[in-house]
Amino acid sequence: MRIATWNVNSLTGERIDRVVGWLDIAEPDVLCLQETKQTDDAFPALDFHARGYASVHHGEGRWNGVAILSRVGLDDPVAGFADGEPDDDQARLVTATCGGVRVSSVYVPNGRAVGHEHFRYKLRWLARLRAHLLADTPPPGSAEWPGQPDGTTARRVVCGDFNVAPDDLDLWNPQAFEGSTHVTPEERAAVAELEALGLRDVFREQYPAVEGLFSWWDYRAGAFHKHRGMRIDLVLASDDIAERVTWALIDRNARKGTKPSDHAPVIVDVGPGPGPMIAAGSDASSTT
DNA sequence: ATGGTCGCGCAGCGA
Image (cartoon, rainbow, N blue to C red):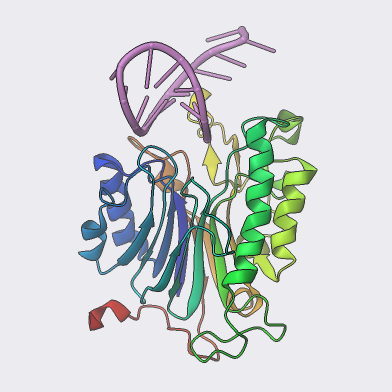
């Protein structure tokens, strides 16, 4: 099973072509999208359906917007937080079950500046994501969705633009980020709190201590060509998924060429194992 | 060089 996540920085005509073209090349079973900047009506679900992908989109229109595409089934979609509180007015979270895995696509607030109201919103949002993951977890032992022994983080991935670089290793130059958002102890602690639920940064586990692996590069000043980036797009996976990861890649090619997103897709391959998770290459959508 | 480029949408803000 191949799981990918990509902040596409809008889904207008040219960007749709890039995303559809990338689907044909990368053939993910599940793709989480962020920053679609579309209304639900404008989301190009048919373009994806034609490639065999079911989809769910949670959007506002002008900003934010998240989606999940899946060719291994897409069930029980939830837009926004499932913690029982009134939903956030920004479309930054969508969750669905794909091929036996509970998948969340997240677009964590940027934060703008340390101490800014939006920075406090970012920290609140991350704390609320943790509450969502606990509330969204089904009873342990569910046949369709086997739980972990502790019942907290059943077979799950949380994919998206976290707007947090978990470690200095994820920065092109740590000195350049002193005093900036994305690297503060508070933001990193909020991500660590998610990992404390039993979720693992599976891309980094494939490349421990390897420098220069980034998923975002500023459009300005030739940052991409100078290799000045950050790794802020993460795939956090529960233990039983994490143990089966066979391969991971950030597809820098998708950041090249005309009209790219400023993010590259992150791809994680999960091998077969015990339990009902659907194997790579299967096509649950053929039943519909 | 305290900039630089995008997207949205038509000014200037957000990233």
